[in-house]
Amino acid sequence: MIPESFIQELLNRVDVIDVIDKSVPLKKAGSNYVACCPFHQEKSPSFTVSPSKQFYHCFGCGAHGSALSFLIEYQGMSFVDAVEDLAKSVGLTVPQDSQKISPEVKEKNLALGEALELASQYYQSALKKSERAIEYLKKRGLTGQIAKTFQLGFAPEGWQNLESVFKKYDDEALNTAGLVLKNDQGKRYDRFRDRIMFPIHNMKGEIIGFGGRVINPEDTPKYYNSPETPLFQKSQELYGLFAARRAIREKGCVLVVEGYMDVVGLAQFGVMHAVATLGTATSAFHIKKLMRQTDTIIFCFDGDNAGKAAAWRAMLNALPSLNDKVVLKFLFLPEEHDPDSFIRLHSKEAFESMMQDAMPLSQYLMQHLTEKNHLATQEDKVKFLNEAEPILKEITATKLSLLLRKRFAELLHLNDKEIDQLLHVAQPQFQFQSNKAQFKTKGKLPSSVKRQFILLLILKPQLAISEDLALAQTESFEDDLLKKVLEIALNQPESKPSSILHGLKSQVDNMVMDLVNEELTHFDDQIHFESEIEGARKTLLEQGKASKTKAHFSALKDKPLSSLTNEEKEHLKTLTQRPKTPPKT
Image (cartoon, rainbow, N blue to C red; front, side):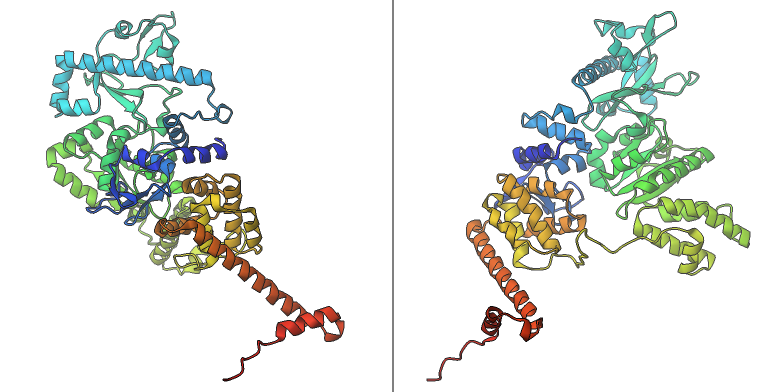
């Protein structure tokens, strides 16, 4: 784990404007910067980036976050990769003791990356020289521009072509990277021979492996991937995702297909938001990776039995990762077609029309469960419930789970109570419960001076003083939040708002954090902070004194008069005295 203190220091060093402007050109608008939101389609800018608050917010789709979250959500980087990327940009080194990768391993991985890049350059050069390979791609309808976009290459016939590329053909890095194999006699030879080469990129755009497709249809296997390496794990990578990022954002969805040629073939016709799994079933890791890019995932499979089986596996693997914002759809092509052949025969418009009509998850589930079950007998209904129960137990999206149960109940002519008893699926919990006390809201924090004080301290932590801790004496969520903000502000007074918010993220309920972010977005940061904080502090002190006086009065009032001391009697008398009315003139 990377220390939280390092993350906060990192967010204090980086400038969110610089980070976002590299990917999304920003324009100055008053004290902030604006752009059309990269997270949803829009014609007029509603995406605002605040240099003083160091976070972005879209007033259209609600996207919100720091420089770190931007790299994760927009670039699709993992948390560790995003931290390392930001650290590198400001000259910081991620603490070595926090990383599981040793310097030695990191150096080896760098050597693997360099070897893969050199090999890719060779394969691309070889493609330009091979009339046979070029003719094959032309027959598949691919242009030179698409080949360039996807960095397609060609591994020529022959056993040791890479020997001319690397000074040390026996370097262990070539074997580890999956470029070279060794036979029983110890002789080395190229893994990929006489194949069209498809480089596989990570989310940084670095080559981590290759896929090779045969030119001669009699050769086997048809597709051949790099082996698992320190850089490449098949179950965690998707072919074409790096190239498809922008199109996925623009279209608002991603299309998951089965092969490299499907991705490249669709791109040739302008369908740029497709990705492919690498010879493995769609995994939960794939789903989480795609959810960073979009809320709508469309699986496209052949309509044959193998395609239907692959769709069902993909659905089962996706269920535990879903939330109620994600839309999962399923598109089945005619049995004789794959995406590449369908779009060539029927046009881009016909393919996009099919995508538009793709089945949502709920419809797909119902169709699959009733495909060979007409629910004609009680035994049929029991069979249906037995198949539905484990599926519902995997669904963590509470609204989807509830609606599916209701749909199943209608289908079987049961009421809600009966379906719940039969399925043994726990009811989803919608009520929010904080760690300290229950907190209910309809979209904004309760208006109070204390809330304003908290927001002011997040924006100007250097104005906090230790005496402010006395303002948080109750178990309310506001006092709990104030204590946590003060802890960061007093220990790190030069923190930027984005750093404080990140520090709070692991300590405060998500609902409260969302509301704080919303309030901060609308907060006027051009005010005179010193006078505003001093005024709020004075009001809170007066409210605290009044509250103590009221509590003291209540305690004395409830005591028997005979048990009060003379001092307490005088104090009670003072508290109950009304101010004298001035004489009329």
